[in-house]
Image (cartoon, rainbow, N blue to C red; front, side, top):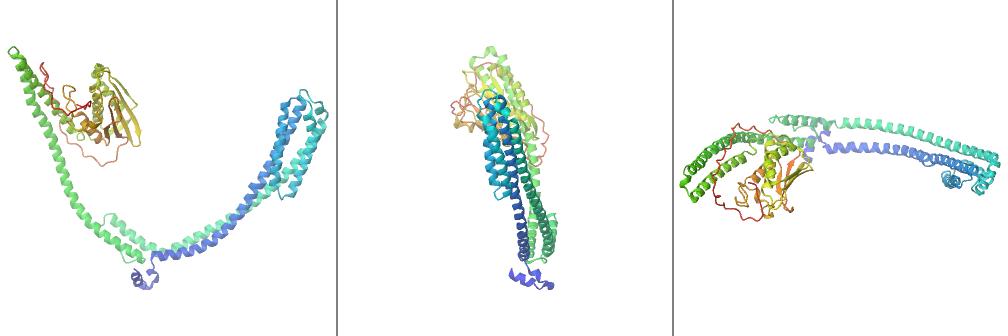
Length: 561
């Protein structure tokens, strides 16, 4: 680097071209520091002078004047107390006199401290105290010593004397206050002069700094001009002109090196962007293939659901027709077999519809809108009104928020959770279901709590897996898809769902949903695919129940159907 600086020193007869930015800044800083030291000393002297004037005003003159005013008030309080006691003879009138003497003593002590070194003011204070002592001796103390309970005759006798002596006290107090006020005014004038001088000093400092800034600006032109040129080149590259070269021949040595580094980076970026363009084209092709594949899968699911359900409907219908037409010729075992066939067909239809609904979560409903959970929960209660009435369930809910999401899917989420709580109720008590909501940072935490049979903690994660059942169909009906769908809906909305394993006396399912819609890229619109209408299952013929399916060994746990 030093060699590069030496090589550049003779270019065009400009020795400063060999200076690095650090050298330019170092010379400027040294010059600025020398000026600032002088200015700082001058400013410190001005501030010290203003500080001394402020100290005299705030710590001596003003407090002394304020204390003298308080002393006058204490003396007036003494006179008022004595006069009231003399007129009424009531002991409580002596309280202002007693308090006034204590306050006056404290004020005098403070004044002597504040006026130390001011002989004239101390002399005025002594004159005032002498007047006070005379009034107390001739008037106040004799009246205060008189028996209480009746007006004091001595107060009337000494009224004129007391008035004259207290007028003398007032005059002495006025003399003291006038002197202290003059002293304060002088201190204030000195402070004003000091502030004026400080303003001039700091004005001079400001002008000097402006001149210094101008000199530094002129001196740094050798840095700023090449830096501006480099910035222009970089902006053109940043704007997309990746084939525009960066000038690496002007400016201080270190800026020239920086320009060379930027130029190298530009070349690497140009190569990477060319590769990225190629990769993006490939990704666009793959995304188009994926969208086409999703559309075909949705159409296949729709067609498959109808094509699979049609034979099932025929099996169930003809089995029931066979049972009705040949009822007299069929024994109990034949009726049982027909019941098994019809029940299997119905369950297969339900399973196909549930799988179709599960596959559509997050694909057909992808537009977030504000969803009022109060209305969604009210619709859930209406949909489950018969089950709620039959079980005698009591359902309560906190005030629910409005969240961004898909109203249909959030309705399915709440309905699955509440219907689960109704289904897996305890046999010895009516269901009690509570929906709670609380804000936790950027999320809302919702919880559905019941007093049902509960879930064994070892199955707390397993129940959210599709087709996982913890009971036989004879105990609790269902396909084991409900909680898996709840998990898929919650995760589609950027949330989580879990079982509170610490809760006892029932089940508590906790889910979190985002309070605000997360920023995301535009979502491609879903392909228009006709919805598969769930076929109405054929009614099973009366007869014995179908044989129990193999179930996961379970304790007391329940899962959604």
